Image (cartoon, rainbow, N blue to C red; front, side, top):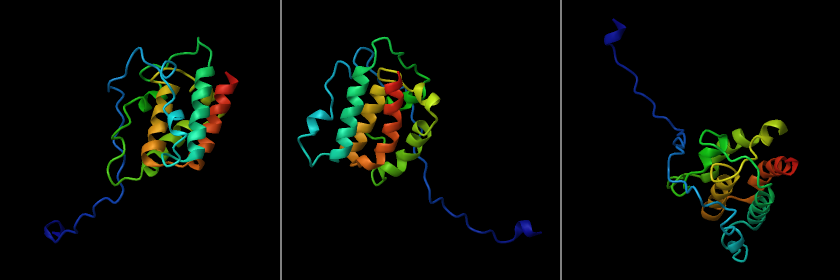
Length: 163
């Protein structure tokens, strides 16, 4: 008979998950950062546009990508970095904290042992170039600080240097 009694109201969720990233958006096949200028270097002279230490980290990241051997493997559509190859504009909803949204996915990708990090050293838009573009967006458009990215990128830099 308790089935017919009063019911407690449902408590709304207080935590929202970021929307899943679909790597099906437009990805230019011929265009790579190797052919394009570093979007961060244009902003180094504008201190009001992004954290200076974050801009320095991104510039170092770009230089390391460019220094990779020409025969470095190209990332495929199902590579772990491919989820960052989307057009980043709009990946952070209005009112959301960009770091709260993307710290977890970046940690799960970059907080691995060195051997697994070596597998992330792949190129083109679904590889390191796409990750660089995505991180540049977070720094330039959402004010992510360099201290938040430093540990993650230093681990990735070590993997790039091992290649």
